[in-house]
Image (cartoon, rainbow over all chains, first blue to last red; front, side, top):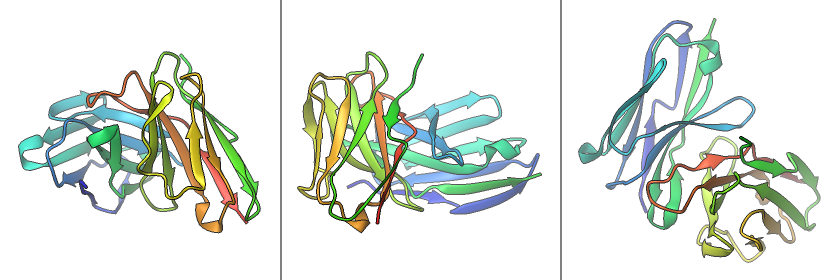
Length: 108
Length: 115
């Protein structure tokens, strides 16, 4: 099956700093989603982005499908950005395959 | 509108017992998915429904796990003869349809602890 790798595994930022999270995947995909899992465990949809670039406030994402990677940019980080960020791609059968996540901690 | 809801939010049971976990999808969503998340890992697919039928149950770990969606809305994940290794967060998601381009929306999860 498809493999999804995320880097870095964990990241500590000072409030206000910028960061880039990376997701590599092993095969072509039609569906890629970024999620934020907050400290209470809720998975929150950030982007549906199988290709191209999208922006939502301080967050933006870019997927280069031909090179099999996606990037999530967080600018001017806030403590509320803390949590785990997951990239997930859709395999046959409509199942999402998740990476192991990037644990982000933003310090005030 | 209301998101995906799951009950109970937490469940503690003893090894060997039977448990049922419930998922209410977003109204109007025809596709429903179950995932399991172990500590420190990403969610892993268990099963998904399109309408009332299980379209893909390839992620169910063994025959102790079973899920139903009798009326095409609410789904119940059933675990028989629970084992300590079943302890995890069970997540439910739904999407408008089961298409490849659909966004899946997740519920808050049920945290299952088997003692």
